Image (cartoon, rainbow, N blue to C red):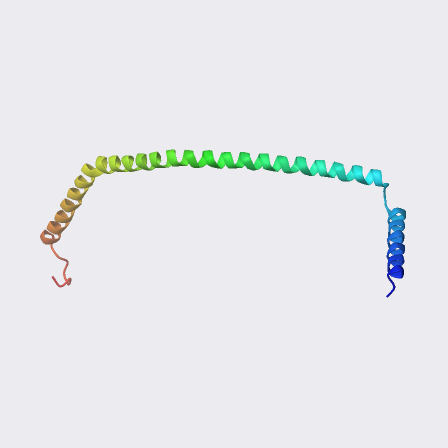
Length: 123
């Protein structure tokens, strides 16, 4: 193939493509560059805002973790202490109730032994 013909074809294609692009462009080159620059600035601002928000979220999570590390063990210990105090405070009542239940059982047994059995009960 002839190099001169190849180069001429390439140049003609390039010129035709450039002409088609210029004729079909919705805006002038200056307007297109201005729009691209505005979009670039908007994208940079948006990325800076996202980065700032991510930093705030990171700090919030860090603060939450520190607070949880301090307060959760305190609350657990407080619950354990309160449960132990409650158990200790009801212990006398539990023993008293157990004695009363035992007395009621003995009374029922005594009543069963002393009351006359109805006829035909087999006892």
